[in-house]
Image 1: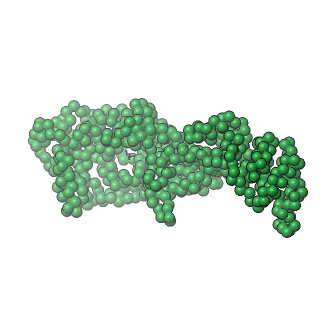
Image 2: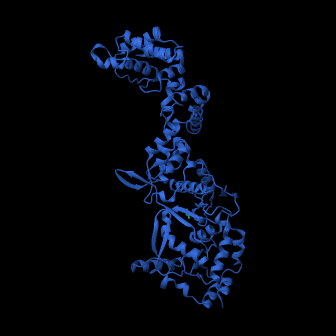
Image 3: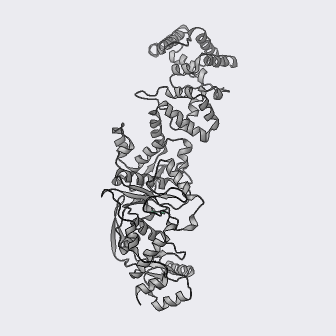
Length: 552
Ligand code: GLU
């Protein structure tokens, strides 16, 4: 009796015609160096930072080389499934502008010629390749119960031996055809194992694009390839799918690195060309001078929803991800300020092998810089979009005063060194609330600086309103009048004059301006006061000053 008889006995209704699939999924017509890669999550409903980072890199590497980035959903472990789990993943990716060229586009839809991209729909394909392996004598059925496997594990543990189904522990490897037939005839349930040709004493070397050359003992585990539910294990599906989908690069978390010897061996046994591997270390965070993994529990920025909630513009997040993806990016970007992310070529060799360090402050800095170079209407839209989701009453105010808000965002923008006030959309309100009457009410905590005498403050405000405020002044005239006011009250017109002769003055023009600023906005720091006064207008300026005078 032959291997073919065994294959027919075990999988009677399955074809072993792998040629059918080999022809159905021909090589892609792409340039030789094009990167074809994928994001291959389980349908868990969300993406975490590590996998967002991996997919960001995947898409970038594919696009840099005019290749393909696709989404395959790995649902062979049906215990891990959640309702609408695919949609959640697609939305998380979309939120970061990570769109796919091929693969799942919804719970039940996909695009691309290399599908299905949902593993549970590829059952027949896997079974065909399993049957093919059986026919080649490279696989066998295993009838061991979970209890027997557990017993073996305990024995191995006690004997301080490697855990797994190998060597003399691979009981079912030695079953005769007759024994197998009898068990099958008695309807004993079975799984299919790979008959590993390896020996643990041999060494193999695998070249990882990020980690470099790694040496491993050869795999000798007879791993499960087909489970009793007829679905493959991760390892087997990985080999079959990435072969048939013509993946050139597998970019994944380095928790898979220890499985590399299995994968390399499977590809070889199946006669497939193995893809290149890039194993990414977990994203790290520095705390108290020590590095640790970015933690879902401790670090809010580990959740991808964080960026959306904070209102960090997606292009800024992408710039940051590139900063931690490639160690040479930051310098490149510094020297190429007029270029975009698309102009930078991602390089696997420049990925940190020990784990990229995540630094929220740096992210905010990048974001602040990015927002400072936007046009005012873009800042308006970004802020409004954020507010509509997270602060609807603020969104209403912004909508009511669209033109006014846009002019406000335009202050000290579009100049060589624009103001850098906003590190994300969620903090804009706390910087501009005083410009809107709806938000200005009930301010009491004024923080004047040098001039603290309340009568003096009132004197400055009254005099300013009576004599020195003229609504149609240009900036220079406006400031000259504040100088005049200062002089009249015994303050130096220029800071320098005051510094040269501090005893001759009560203070200087800056102190007087601070009074005008704080009584108007209740903040000691604002963008250009002239611009702010222009926007607020005489009525509001006077009524705020009068309210202040009355209330103090
Ligand atoms: N489904 C695997 C995971 O979620 C994919 C790993 C891979 O990219 O090969 O970790």
